[in-house]
Image (cartoon, helix red, strand yellow):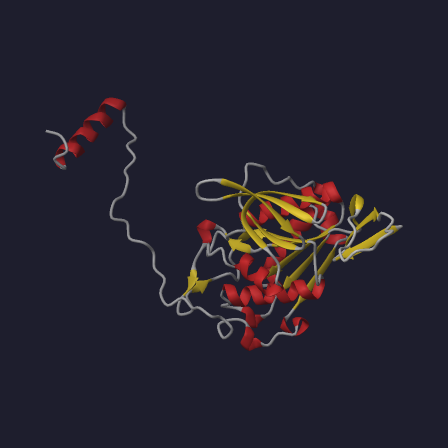
Length: 301
């Protein structure tokens, strides 16, 4: 007798032993063989401003994004590379999802050129000023709309602009899925993800039931280059979607400043009590100048 059990797209087959005396416990499955019919991977990416271009909007205390050159958040880029490696091993499809102004589509196009199968941008004027809670509410709504239960959701553990590390865990709470952050590697075997992650004083290996959310750290691997032909393919043949609040069934009071649980009350550049000096002098002159500085501070006599 053969048994077939399905859960969220995953299935296994196995032989059940003959039961001459059925008991209260279910029989064990033998010769267990797992397969994934179609592995669905979703990568949440964020377009962040380039470090040299970061500025904030006076009065709102939020980063200015319109018209500011951006790039894919480096840890989200790690998540995309990890997704591509998982697809190479297990097959399936990769969807990249982002929330932001219209220009965030540039980063989604880059992700498509790297190898993602489709891109979804959630963009609406009402989203401006959203904190991490409002952002995770929107992204979770987008995930529910496109994939009610993707097998695995990957994102960066932190973003290079706000650096809160909160969106990934909050998405997992919204979707009631397990979460692991600070991941270096992810493997999928049978119905579990095996995650290698870096903690403060150790490296930990976790086994997680799928579906799950995993936040990636930057790792030694280098994200793949984009072939010229892939750029043309991304523009011409890959699926691109754009949704607003109405598409997600959300109300303006759930997002933006109104839907945020926190707000920034002040923002300022740190003061530098000490500043370094670089001496571009011949060695003997540089030594004399260093000695003079040390003497002036009474560090040497």
